[in-house]
Image (cartoon, rainbow, N blue to C red; front, side):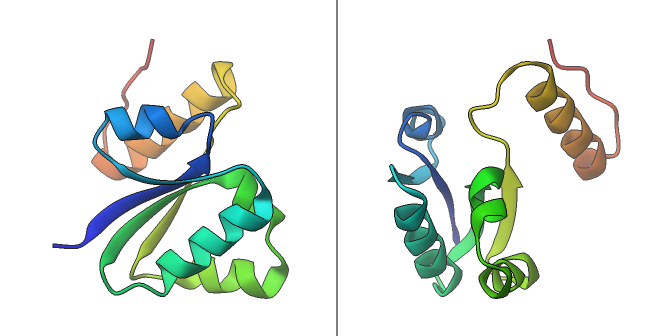
Amino acid sequence: MRRVVAVCPASVAPGFALAGVETRAYTTSREGRDHLLTLVRSAEVGVVLVDDALIEALEAPMRRVVEESDRPLVVPVPMGRGGALEREYLEQMLRRVIGYHVRLR
């Protein structure tokens, strides 16, 4: 079975770890990019959760490789923005994935 790994800022890594998700924490965008590239090339990883800000910071050719990857599947997730924007994004993502509107409180 392939693994799920989160590439996330060090400040949110403990939350993913508490949920049982393997993490690759970073403190600089360069470090995060290196983790992401290593995981995209791994045959043992099925899903990579990555901070959407890190995806936005990638150079265009590298972003294209990450966005077009289907194994592992790279899922951009807002990390660290908080508030209504994050809640709205998660509600939209859940609606797309499960086909049902879920309201988060």
